[in-house]
Length: 289
Image (tube, rainbow, N blue to C red; front, side, top):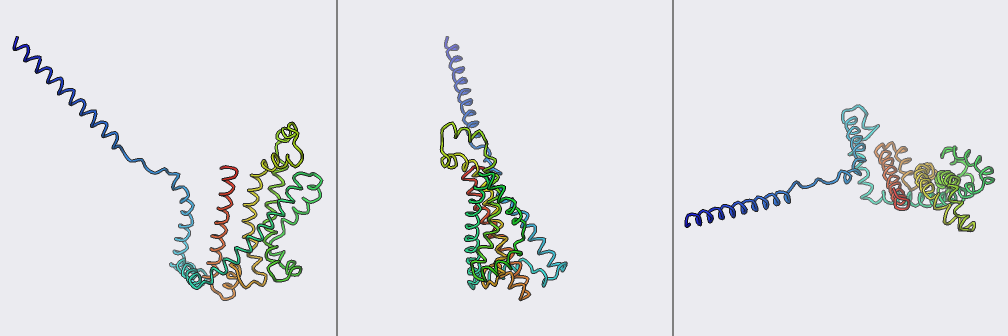
């Protein structure tokens, strides 16, 4: 009887020990699961940096062709030389004055061109008669190069700021006009029928149906208009300008300073890209990606 009792006690202790080891194993497994591999950052976080790869490769290639003598330094300065030129002009304050003048001209000209383009685009998009009257002329004017306008604008408006701003406005006008006119004309007929069912007036139909439907087209046109404004500002600042990034470009040519010429081109690229990113961000927030 005593032997049986001892055997039962031993079995009980072994069972408890087994449960304890099992519980310990479960705890260690849980700990190992909780200390699993740390997740890597999402690849999408680095996607915006992809746009820097090609410019970086171009800068490296640019440095190599100059350093190896493939292109003479007096024809194309090294990236370091261009950076030193920009730093020197920035430290002296000269650069910021030129940039501020160019930004003001682009802002005024693009704003005026967008406003006028919106008016004409709305008129030709809503009215077939207005489109038949105006569109052939505007399509022809669209093909005139920016430099071809310079002599005429000098004759009409002189060498002041008016000629420069109006020339930039011409560049910003056409993308806005074309995209908005097309967008309004392409509004779905079913949307207009819904407006008619709810007995919306002409103004209410425009405000609630037509313009919201054409808004993506308008924003695409604004983006293109701002881009062309930066292209037209170069021609505008050739009109007897004494300030502006375009003036710096012309001055570099006059002084045979390729570092100033390349620095001015890079400034146009950087400022234009910043404005494009800003417009694109507004478009994405308004209409979604």
